Structure formats: C-alpha cells, structure tokens
Length: 398
Image 1 (cartoon, rainbow, N blue to C red):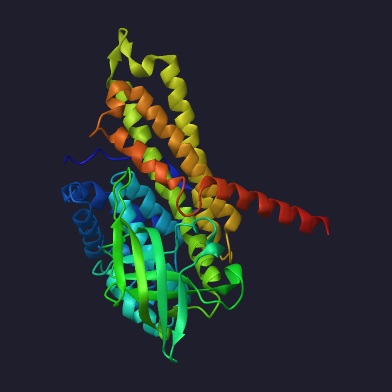
Image 2 (cartoon, rainbow, N blue to C red):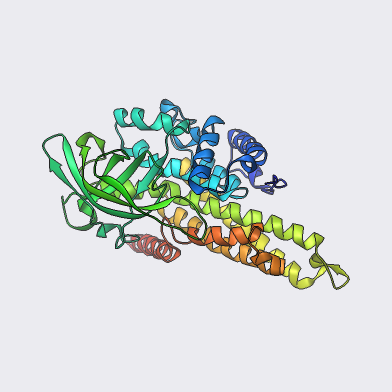
C-alpha cells in the first residue's frame, strides 16, 4: 500500500494552545506515520492491530499514554499530546489511531486510580507496546446508562473477589492482555454501587464468547466472566467508586475521540481538494464549479471549528481544570458530527469512486460512524452540555 501524501494540519500548531514540545512531538509522529504505517499488515485485523501497537511502542509514541515514573513521556496525562497523536494517526490510518487510543483508555484508570504496585505491573509494558490494554465498561443493557451495570464482584475470602457477568462491544476484546472491568459491588444502589478491577486475560473463568464484526473492522468482542477469582488488590479506587473511576477516565479521553474525528475530517478534506483539482468535467476542473467550492468552504469551516473546540478542551484540562465535562462533551459532539458531514461531502464529490471499496473516502465513511456513538453518543453529549449549562445558570442566579 502506497504512503499517502502529507496531510496538512493548517496553522493549528501555531495556535497558543501548544508548546514547542507539542510541535516537536507532532512533527516526529507525522514523519513516522507517513513513513511506516503503510508498511504494516492490513488484512487480518488482530495481526494488524498488534503490529501497530508494537510499532508505536518501539518508536516511543506510546509513552504519551503513561506517566513518566512508569516509562512514559510526561509527569501526568498531557491531553494535548494525546489529541495530537489521534488527530495525526487518524488522518493516515484508522487502525493505528485505534491502537494508540486503546493503550491509553485501557490503562487510564490504572494511571488515575491504581496504586504503585498496579502501575508498575501494567504501565511499562503498555508504554513499550509489549502488552495490549482494554477498557470493559459496556454491557448489553448498560451502554450510555453506566448505572445499569449488572456484572458483579463478590468477596471470596479477605484477599479476592469473584467476578461474574458479561461485557460486550469491548475494543481489543480477544487480543488484550488485561481488562479494566467495571462491576457491581453493591455498596449502594445504581452508580454508587460500582467498582473497578484489573482482570488479566489468562484468569481462569474468563473467555471470549463472540468476536463482533463492525463496518470499520477492529478487534471487538463479547467477554464472559464465570466466577473469575481476582485479587482484591486489583481494585482501582475505593469500594463503590467505579462510576467515579469511569467518568474521570472518560473525562480525559473523550476529547481525544473528537481529535480522531478531526483527523478523519482532515483526511477527507485533503482527498476532496485533490479530487477537485484533478477531476476534469464540463471543460474545467471540479474545483472550478461553484457548488463544489461551496462544499469545500463548508468543510473547511467545520474542520476549523472542530479543531478549536478539541484543542480548547485539551488545553483547559492541561491547564489544571479538575474536570472538563462541558468542554470535552462539546469537542466530542461537534468534532464527530462535523466530520460526518465533511466525509459525506467528500464521498459525494468523488461520485461513483466515493462508494468504491478501496478508495480512501469510502473507508473514512465507515470509520467515522462509530465515533458518533462510542465514549458517549452524540445524544448523550447534548444532555451533558445542556445540564452543565442549566446548572451553571442556576448557580449564577443564587
């Protein structure tokens, strides 16, 4: 597969959101991605994903998902770096973006809430690309409604718990070496009775019951836990703090979903401009037609707007905000919805080629759809944004 021509980020890196270290990271990653990603396996999704994790680890880029004390890049999460990585990788290779993101999401809860022993056990191998991580939150009846989780963990003596239940739509399911699993421990009803544990893939009683095929292939599975005996020391946070663990983790990584959507949109715009300049019809180029120019202008505006919201959210978190619930929700909602429109226009302007398998815009059309659902569907983000605004307004009135 040929390497794509360079994908422009415009003047994004000149914005005051970034330090020179971010610009250096972005330049290094873009050069690596353009030179290396097209050489990696593509046909078998498990093999392809493992190869990308290994390559990103060897090149040092997975250090961005782990704290410096455990083999990482920064003292704590630098969300701008995470977003830049997903923006750059998604513009070139959707599975590489997925591989990078899941190494972060699958260990984010360990970084935030794990004790030193857990961090030392799991984080260095993830940073080196030698172990694959996963985040097991969703169930058939508990996707957006985390409080409905039914998988349980009950005490087994003083030092272990038994985990029983099913998780589904789990990314890296079937290839991960460990899973951060959210379970009901019953300290209180609903969201206040959840806890989080790290479960190793070789734990007796753990199995993969189904590999799930989706429109943009990546490792996805249903997991079963049959009284899996897990050390109590593998708990992240305290008893009943599972919801807090999940939300704090998503608060960091939700902005990065917007960054991935932004990368897909940048690539679609790149392909659109190439097509508009090269496609000849009616005695001119496609780009000479005013309707095509209008479509291009709308796509440019939507890419720029998404970029501002994504990097505003990342900068706000890196500047010390304890939570960026509103900013991350806005970034995720606008970036994913805008990217869907930008990619749809790209398909339209490619005509018959746009729906032909093997053409980049057709791949992007499949890639973007899931981003409007996972880590909080657009509809959920609207509720979050509105509630935050109503709460802020009410507090101002008093």
